[in-house]
Length: 189
Image 1 (tube, rainbow, N blue to C red):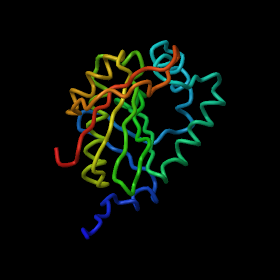
Image 2: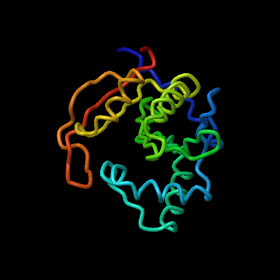
Image 3: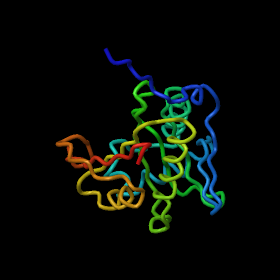
Image 4: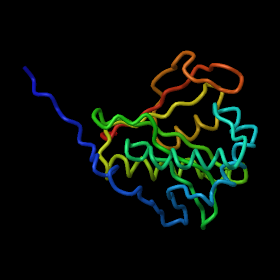
């Protein structure tokens, strides 16, 4: 009988404070803080972000509750970072649906409207991907997006996430269920 392999995810990473990740080009990924609530609220007033995400921000108080949940989700491997450029909030990136035993996680992201076209999402995705593979030990990182969300498809391609298939009716958006493209990278890619 073959020996079962255990995942090599360093789950102790998620028992400590969420790290800040920084690049040489001024892009920094840091945990969300209470003072970021207005930026998150602003993001969810944008028609594109509202369309591609199920949630809506009705108040700053509601956003404060999201920040609390994002902080507590860190212990299960589901971290959300504020993407900042030279200290200004430019977007969000996070890990979700993490399975530390299987060594699998998924990326989710959005750039604020003023930062679109500045490669914020691919730069942040590359930073988190390197960290998740090399520092934490995930084996697989998935990225899904609506088949109609062409900018997210471009981010996946820029970051080397090959297209694997279409998940029928797998995502709920403001106008109903959408088929979703599945992209993924392996640590061995």
